[in-house]
Length: 381
Image (tube, rainbow, N blue to C red; front, side):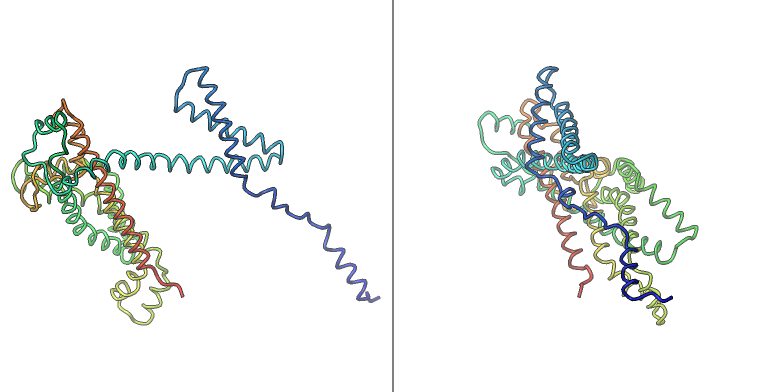
């Protein structure tokens, strides 16, 4: 016996089962920032009361505040919204706490550097145009007792940093990028490529002082014992920079779709033209970022330049003759060994200015890397 259309509609509606409950988005929306702020303030007050009883300690107060805050968040939302909502808010609070723990030290570091370096730099612009040649501790003593500005400057260290890093980049970038091209395009699973990857991994973990000792020993054999010059410091930085560029560039080249390569090869395009016309332009943005990040990584190295490049109070424009100073070593030298130990404040101010200039160089390099990556990124239609 056939079933009527009306009966089929009834059966079809009955097969749909019970109506599903509607999701209440109000139960999963993020917690109110005002509520969280009140809970945090209350937790800080309770932790401060505990510290008053057992003895004040800033680190212990911060830890106690966070523990009380997490417990209060869970209990509050457990009572009002249930276990699931309470657990969700606790995890959310942990994520925000981890973000704060990552950002606060960076902000504190930048504030410390800027607050200690900018005032003496603005009061003594000669720090950028003079060097420390013939500057003795007596000059600092006179400056402290009689007043006046800082004498000398760090032009020699700024020039040395730029020249040494530039030479290291000129050597390291082509080697690193071409090694990455070989690993991705030619040596996929060969014994030589596996050996090269192993050596790159080992070089990535080599301490910076070892790179400095290597460069010092190499130039001592070539030019005589105790030879220190700017080019030796550049070679030491190359040992540190090449594996960084190789690893980052290899990852960027692997991002390029293999379909692009196969399509070009299917049309009879030679391998080298596929690399130069398709692979490299497509990965140009990532390659630029990896190169600039590698430069920013080595520009602040102190130990290898201390061993290989040495110290020079005068400005040296020739990296192939005589020691050459750098901002990192200049700041370390004056902070550890002031020109006049009895009047260390002028040396400390010079050290802070050197650190500030180094931070600004790294910041500028990162901004350039972002700008270049954005300019070279494939345009979206």
